[in-house]
Amino acid sequence: MQSITTKLGHLKDKLESIAFLVTQESKAKESHKEIIQCLIILTDLESELTDADQTSSSGKLHSDEINKVSRRLELWAKRPNQINAKILTAFLKLETSGMLYITENDLKKSLPNEESFESNFAQMKIIAEKNHGKVFEQNGEILSIWPPVLSYVKKFEEATLSKN
Image 1 (spheres, rainbow, N blue to C red):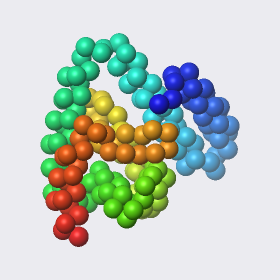
Image 2 (cartoon, rainbow, N blue to C red):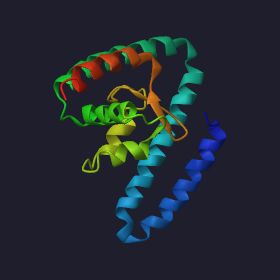
Image 3 (cartoon, rainbow, N blue to C red):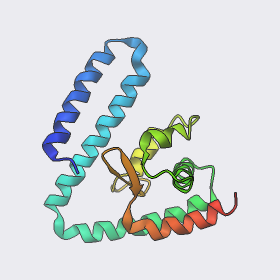
C-alpha cells in the first residue's frame, strides 16, 4: 500500500496535469478521466485517515459494508445488465480466463461501451455511506476481490456465470 505522502505527491502531479489539460478545450475526456482518478486518490486518502481516526468503529464499518455488499450482489445477480453487475462479471470472466493479474485498464477494455465505467468502478472500491458496495481492492495496478466479501462474490459468480 502506498504511503499517504506518496499518494499526495501523485495527486499533486495529476492536478498539475489537469490544470494543463483544462486549457486545451479538446481534452475534455482526458481531463474528466484525470479528475476521476484524483477523486479516487482522495477517497483512498480519506479512507486511510478515517480508518486511523476511527479504529474502534472500523469493525462495525466493515461489517455494515459486508452486509451491504451481500444484499447488492443478490440484486446484481438478478439484474445482469446493471453496470455494477457487468463490471463484476467482466472481472470474473477475466479471472476465469486465466489472467493472473487484472488491472483497471484490463477491466475497462472488456467493457468498451460503458461510458460510466470509471465513476461506477470507483464506487465499487471504497467504503462510503452511499457507495455501490466495496467489492474490489486495488493494490497498485492490480485488482482483486475484497477478501471479506469473497464468499458472496463466489455465490454471485455461480448464479450468473452458470447461466452463460
